[in-house]
Every structure is written in C-alpha cells, then in structure tokens.
Length: 315
Image (cartoon, rainbow, N blue to C red; front, top):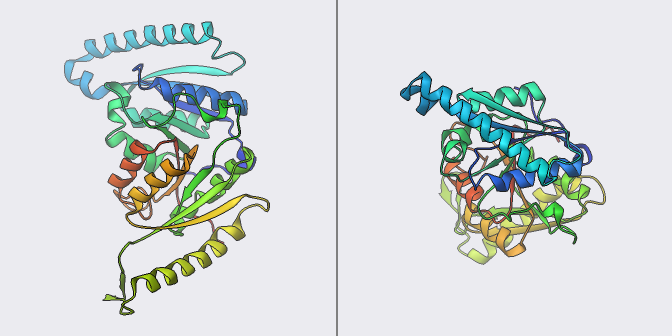
C-alpha cells in the first residue's frame, strides 16, 4: 500500500470524515469542514452501515438500515446547506454497506484521500466500532494521514480561532517509524506559523544496558547523560531535517511515555499532537508505544491527534 503523499507546505487536497450520525461524531465533522475550507480541499463524508449486526438480523433489516441512513444523510446535507457550513466547498456524501474498514479503505483509495478525520467515542455505528478493531485498522493500514478528534478536543477546530495557533507537539523516540511523522509535523507547524515542540520521553528509572543495569549509581548523573544523548539525537534527526526557519523547541521528560505525552499536551495547551506509527509490528501502533497506550493517548489527548504510519525516509 502506498505511503502518505508529502505534505508540501501543509497542503491537503482531499479529506474523508467518518460519520455515524451520533452527537459525538459531529465534533470531527466540524473539524473536517473547517480544514476543508482552509485548504480548499474536497470533502467526502462517509457513513458505513456495518454488515456485522444487521447481517445476523437478516437482509431485510440491513435494507431498512440502509434506507434510514440515506434519509439521515439527506437531512444532514440539508441542515449543513441551510447553515452554510458547506458554502464554497466541493463535497459528497457516501453511504455504503459492508465491513466498515474495507469500505473506508476503498473510499480512501478511490478518492485519493490525503487525510481521514475520525472520532473516538460514540454510542452507535462507527463511533462504537472506532474504539475497537476498526480504529486499529485505520491507524495501522490507512495510506493517508489520520486526524483523530477525541472527547478532550475542542468542539471547533483551532483553525477557526482569530488568535495565533498554540504550539504543535511532536512526540518521538527517534526511531524510523516515529520520525516518519516529522516532515508532516514541521510542514503543518510552518504552514500555520506556530512553534513545533519536540518531546522525547525517557524512562524514569535506569534501563538495562546489554542486559545489565547501569552501575554509575547516581540517578541525576545518569539522567544528565541521557538528556545530553537525547539532545544529540534531536540535532541529528530533527533539527537538521526540517526546513530552515522552523520554530523548534526540544523537551526531554522522564517517566511513562503515554502519561508524559498527555501531561505535556495539557500543560502546553497545544493545538495538535503528532505521532509516527509503526505498521510493521502487529498490535503495536507506535514505535515506542503499544497499541493500548496509543489508544489511551488518542482518547485522552486535550487536542486532535495526527498520526502517520510507515517507515521514515533515509536521513
């Protein structure tokens, strides 16, 4: 499957928003509308009538659900047109039946989607499924950027704010997978004229070195050495590989990666969190974070989370 296309100057030409007609899914829709308007991108709004539950109930139940979804889609389009939320946008409503991820993947490929916007909570339909296997499939397999708008995100996109955007946070362990997201993090930070804060989390306690515990005995000294080594990695892998003029700040925290990422998001009040994901290892959504931790970050983040999967280019 192809890799995400380069986000040159933060450009996004086509957006897919996964919708389920629940109140919770309206927040991702608001964000997708704003992003599409900002970039002049095509907006594709998709709802998939899952074949799982209705398949058990029988073809008649599936048909009734599809007809109801068509009516709901028409009403949503009417409401959005009336509110002028769709004014000036090229858009389409897509309602499909079948396996949720398979249908979303088909739309991504067919429409050459640059970014898919999804939610993490919902009482029904895609919203509920996004907490399970479908969410994992989107993160691990989508050949485009994935923007997750969780319950901690603001109702409206920060792009709509009149004041300058707050910093973007890029969490990395300097592995190939996490650095895959660096070009996108820098590109979008430069596009919106905001600072990019690079966060590297180290273990709070000494770590094994060739299967032996470090023997320096001085925790403060060990942390100083680890922080110095991290600074060198930052210079080599980040500072030298972003456009000149990018406003960069480097932070090193000690603790549990997921907890420190969420805490830094809250403390900085950032407008976007960027993570690079590892699609090569089953059940590991980020190179340095197990899937369950990524799920916790996405659901617990105080801002939208942009995820990029794949391996980093050679540097």
